[in-house]
Image 1 (cartoon, one colour):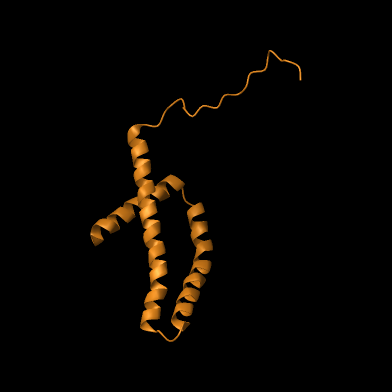
Image 2 (cartoon, rainbow, N blue to C red):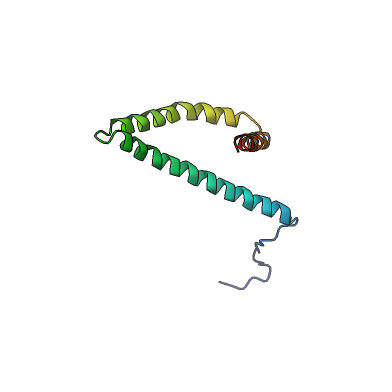
Length: 110
């Protein structure tokens, strides 16, 4: 390959023209931590319910099977509608409304 003096490699920089402010970066990490905690709580609950049913009805797995069947049936039926509803709304307004409502509910229940 011949040397080409006009060739200049593209340099990708991690620094943008307008760097993210420290307060925005801090808010981002707080949201990530809250999402991690919420997801962990949800998974823990999904793990605990079948165990609780097994403690209540120790001789049969039918309540656990019915619970999981109904849970996933409702999810399969509702998710397409929820996706269409979310796609029809402006994302930033929807996110802001969701965050405000979640915070309001969290403060009411604590």
